[in-house]
Image: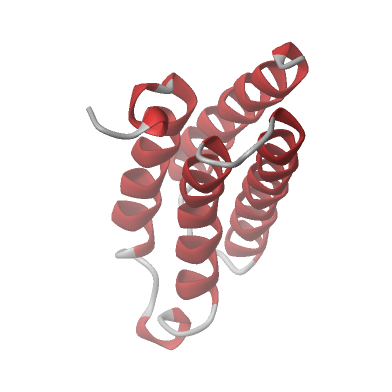
Amino acid sequence: MAFKFENLKVWQEALELTGIIHEVSEKFPVKELYVLASQIKRAADSVALNIAEGSTGQSTAEFKRFLRFAIRSSIEVVSCIYIAKRRKIISLEDFQLIYDYTDNLTKRIQALKNSLN
């Protein structure tokens, strides 16, 4: 693997989150295609993208900054699924799957950030 981020477990898990979100958002009604479905996909993608971008930075401080962005994006994913649940466009099973996965991933990103000197 040529890039540092490819070896990071949190990046691999964030990439998995993008797949989960894509599959679940495909079930959203057409009227949400360019609204909530688009927003949740961008938020999930942003988690992986920020981890990758930050890992190739010039300093540990810069990497930590991008990990904070990734954490914020993961929180956005959770907020999106609450909106989807409130609008009754996501099943409770899909909600819980995404919630649990994102909660665990967010904790792992936070732990990585905290471990950096």
